Length: 306
Image (cartoon, rainbow, N blue to C red):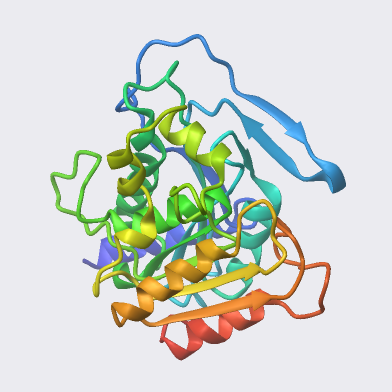
């Protein structure tokens, strides 16, 4: 036990000293489940203000932003960037947010999940969900080395990444991956920013729905991935923020999800800005109010931060 403790201390020190505790590693070292032969190459691009995105993601990874092991809170969060299930905005709704959590002594993991495609997947509707469940496995299996309390691993997601995060919070009873060790796939909490929640006609972000489920999904498939319909009294607590003038993903998504959480006695906090639009990451341009500060207070109140 003494030798193991010394090894863990050395591992944590080396990890922390390595590029400010940032490291990217593969979700799979062997064949990727639910994949088929393909000739698709990943691409990269830059949006305005230098925000990076990736396309055609076929090779899923996890990038770790670990706090100082001597100060770590024990809490971890897996971050799902958005992009309509078409691209992944890795900086604004990924790395930038992970760095803030890292400063709060939270271990943050940015998930570059496979983008759904009939060209690369046998069943594209479950591809991203498989990746977020695999991320929970990896974080749990390495919890001791990374100073993480396995009962304090949550998920965060933004826009379509919010749909994926909410799916992780409502589909956890169904393992879409091999889980021989019976690792807990239920997030301890969920943080959702301007999230896609529903795929029903009145609320759906049609691009996200089409990219994940196809051009003409069945009514059963639509209901299966409309997360407001899947909430139970065991759904994880939630912090949700949105803008009332969001024309990309209607604020009704967050309202419906909060209503479902409330009806099932699930603790939730809902923050609605009057304006700000969609996809602003950490800083809503319409106000000096910071959702991350309110989220931090929510985490403190619920015992995930000191």
